[in-house]
Image (cartoon, rainbow, N blue to C red; front, side, top):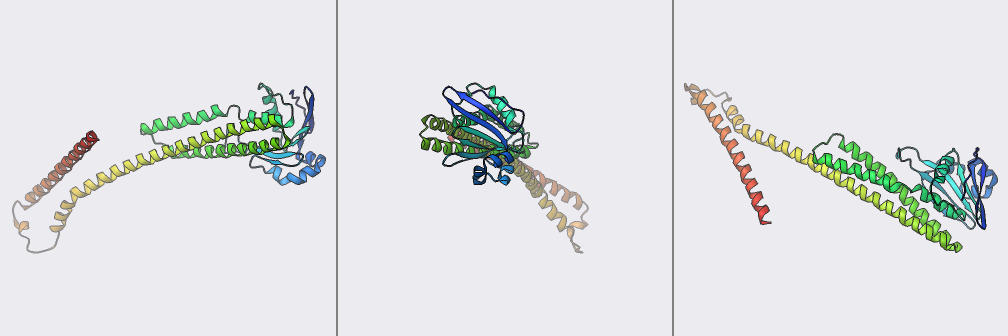
Length: 316
């Protein structure tokens, strides 16, 4: 198929393949409604074409109609490239309200094997073009997640939550996109089977499998990101436990001292220790001795716990 790009939004291209001939048009919403009034009112209301949010395909008796909502790889959570399409027996129609189709068709011309013998085959080639470099694109997400994992292992947790949440949101956009393309492929496969077009049925079956693999890959990446988030939360919990352990030890050490200070802070007249010459020094010595005994106990208990853990590890 040789594609010639016109200058206006209302244009027609002729596609010739040996014995078959079919046309491709790129029309504005208004022109499409004017030329194909019945098709427009059946599937394309003006509001729907101006607010497209997902990819779909619908089978009708003499046509296949649907929409594309393609996420921009540079900014997945931004505005999508959206337009409608209509497949007739000898004509393929793009329906757009902004000039977005021409750049895609120009880029598509540079890909090999874009010849199509029918409008349905062209739709397959177009959808295949949309998925052309997506495996490399998804590999970039896997590399980013591996880098995040390395940062976690190095205890570099700065802005981790913000980064992982942004990645998960972008993966959710891709997951929905590939699932919609897979559903489109199933619908188009069914349409080809009803028409007895075995080649088109096989092509859309392959497209379903490819989109399904991308969907599975995205789900695996989402699971990977969830595991990293759980790993991060585990490290945060460990740090909090260490802090609580330290505070507990400090509280335990000073609790007897607080008791002694409170004891001798009572306003009783007859307290024998208050009249002793070295009473203050004795009380200070007792407090110091209590602190040293507690420090020795905690250290000894910590070593005992480590030894038991090693023994249990060797037994296993």
